[in-house]
Length: 61
Image 1 (cartoon, rainbow, N blue to C red):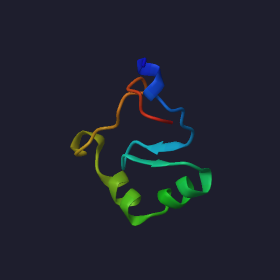
Image 2 (tube, rainbow, N blue to C red; image 1 turned 90 degrees about the vertical axis):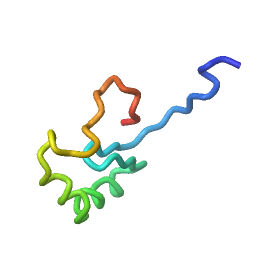
Image 3 (cartoon, helix red, strand yellow; image 1 turned 30 degrees about the vertical axis):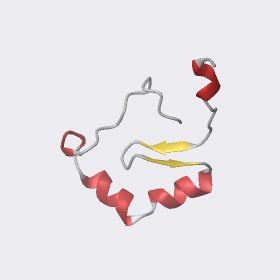
């Protein structure tokens, strides 16, 4: 069994601010309207508990 056998392709949207994944655009849009997301957007990036991951970190997009 190779390492590729355990990888599953994913498509969707990952909010780097909230560290949440959404499979479709309506879910992502709804998330962006939530109090949680809005509150997290007000926190300066350097003060966030979990800084956004780099684009090459393997985070699904």
